[in-house]
Image: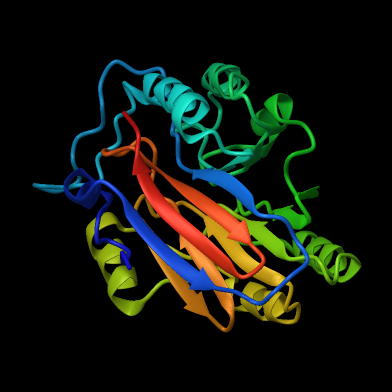
Length: 272
């Protein structure tokens, strides 16, 4: 399995990565979805300089909207999922309303439903103008329950934790997917590299509290997140945690995930 900071540039070499995880049986249909993250749309004339020589996680802000447009076209014509999940950082600068509108214009071209998640680059006030009602929310698809959480303050607020607990309690018996920008899992090496090389913290500030809450509900099968700009997957306490790489970073990958009653199949797919 790819590990955090086994960088998404490996996609250029290996093309596709696939993994199959076992899950508990459930009365749910097979659902095929695309997991996209960290678009970082921006209308700028130059890209940020590398943070250190050979920095592999370089954001192509200049091409961000074009990359998204091409990804949408590829998803429509080649991948053809039932739904698309976008786990945050839709724009690079949170007050950039025009870029966020451009993101929505391109996402609206998807031929399947899509579900945005707010990231820590996305400001609530601006985000809600473009995607009203899309902070803490849930929906059903194919017998699966999906929950989106607001981690834009780098943690889950008490009101969000209470809402999450109430929502999961009200939907017992339904296999559940949680969608959140900030990841809940990492490892010591990844944390060290992120702090040393990028001066960032990878995981949610109250990740352990959130994981304890999720573990109370055995219906929670999968947690989708972004933020790290690199691909990573891990099983922990019966829950599968899957982090999608950043669309804005070459090779501009998304995850194709197939949910079924007895397995979760995950595949990294580079965009054209």
